[in-house]
Image (cartoon, helix red, strand yellow):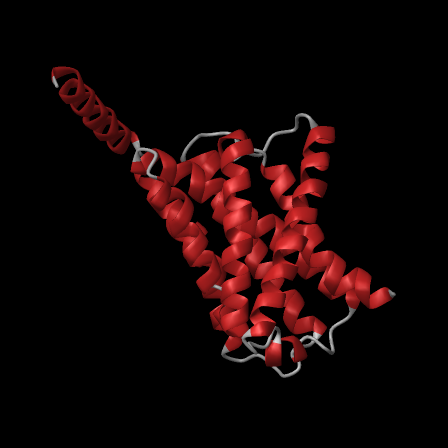
Length: 236
């Protein structure tokens, strides 16, 4: 009884110290990571041509990369931390590539299962959203897949998970589930199917990062899952 009480008191003190040690600029970083990309996408949707053009997409992607650059500035200059603090390091590339290939295969299998289940309920996948991209070149689509892999993993996995885990005192519902939900909602324009697929993919990616702390693997896997169907399959 006394031991359990001491453990609870100790855990509360540790949680309080962790919250106090969080720098104010980290909260700015979380705002950027959570809402920066969705905000840019929403702004551009207000005057988007249909179908999309290469110039329009290039402009939007550049601004999204700028959001990522701002977040990295927060990490390096604001928080005075290295990129390893968000899971990015220049070590063990062979292992990271192997993890990425394995993760991409698992993701593709899981997402194909999702598509099959959604089809059973007559929920369309893609819909009108896919038609908006019909006029863009494969080079532009390649840029989109690279940006999605790099920016979304840095924001929703690397930065948010690392920072929220510290702030929440290791509460998985906060540092794992909350970013997955926001990540899924950011794909609202893709309809119900897009929400479901993004949630499932986000959950797999978040859990994998939490276990490995290898953001390179996440980035490569995310890129492959987008690149193969949207670019490679179009060349066959």
